[in-house]
Image 1 (cartoon, rainbow, N blue to C red):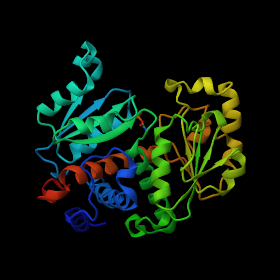
Image 2 (image 1 turned 180 degrees about the vertical axis):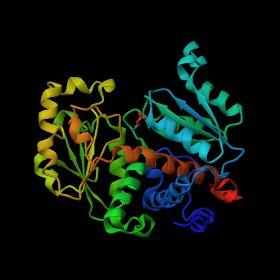
Image 3 (image 1 turned 135 degrees about the vertical axis):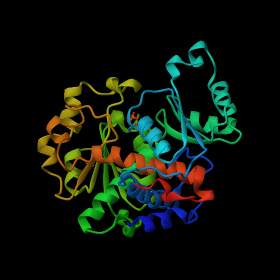
Length: 345
Ligand code: CP
């Protein structure tokens, strides 16, 4: 994509409305996901410039509020906001007034009183971002992972990455594929689905785009009730690997007690880990995603994790462009881009 094409893409009014908040992939639907991927593609191009920064959100303030640990999501959102020229406030929860007993509501209202435009929230409680969205007056709320519920931007990153790999295979620009490339794609999500917010967001995203989603993992780590989920369940990973286009590996969520749902890590790995033997069963074009952090030797063998078909690092790289797109669509798309090229490299 040329610089002028990037400018044209970003200056185009949003094709579908996004917002005011991003709490769930369900807030987007297929059209919203397609719009995020379209805009992210333009920002991926901006990232390849020598000065990967645009003034799109100059004057806006983005606060990151992480009540749970994070490496990728937090850094990715903060990098994305800075590349859009927004100011970033990063609340260090461990050294904040939260430790003196201040409630989530008072914390959020205090931050909003500072004049912020967006709150990026990670919280151990499912539904916390939805609650915060009811308390704020004008700020946009973005769910950066809430309990077992959802991690919408991770699923968007995964879709973006899968499409990028498909486009490379077809030797075409990813933007030209739209989202039709997901029709009939077979995505196998493996592991601790029960405790995984990434799995829930991926199921919503991939199925909205027309992919076939298969869940594979020990019965004890499947959700208690799958009524209404647009998925099938594989009782044996080896039965479904050969037909997978995408394998999405999940981490055992030890912090949510998943260790007590399996007899031992060794048995888990024997049944559900992506070992050298299993990776050999994958089709040549199949790719493996993982939201990170990976636990080498448990859900994935250490040498498998470094294979070219495992696109974990690429997911992290793409996370910045996708989160730029989300921030831009929520905070800046209505005013379009003024002087996009002024900080062009
Ligand atoms: N994928 C993901 O959410 O990673 P972090 O916990 O490091 O943010």
